[in-house]
Length: 106
Length: 106
Image (cartoon, rainbow over all chains, first blue to last red; front, side, top):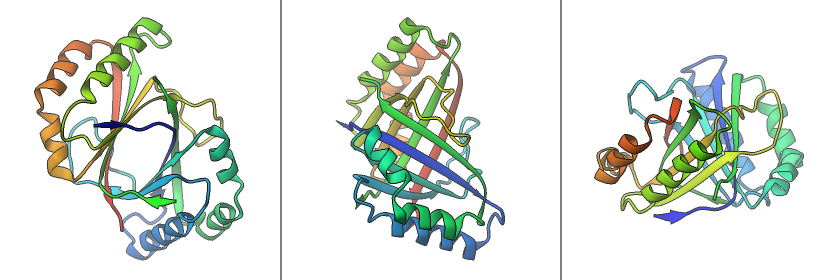
């Protein structure tokens, strides 16, 4: 019931080898390592829930939701060496990435 | 830098009249009204940020991100009278809804 403020950066990953547990765990481990990036206020590493309705997309493999104070902090994250190393280490795992960036509407 | 636990329910709305400020504000006001639903731990009402990269989808109108303790709490929300009234009041505004539900990966 509490309103969250900030810049939400939500990334959904689809894997080249969907269902491959080793690849999934490597990606999750890489994301965990990024948790220590200082500009990130909060993060959530997710897998699709077992909810089913027409509007629900559960085809992705891993969800990476980040809360930043503002857009500037998110931009610092984009070029943080830990983030760049994650991309280098894990980019071969995914086939598709979709990102939704949201700022406070109210 | 703090790890968030819980069930993330992230909804993206596309409007029948994209760019229509009255419709956008009606939807946002409806979402604000849902903030008082007791099973919601945290919520964020968002608009697309002005970030631009190939992977970023900024075509939606409004983002509604909810944190629940677990799947059961999310299911209670689905049938909460305040939620059902919101759908009744606002369903004519949107042309498309995409939902991603995520549980803790770690």
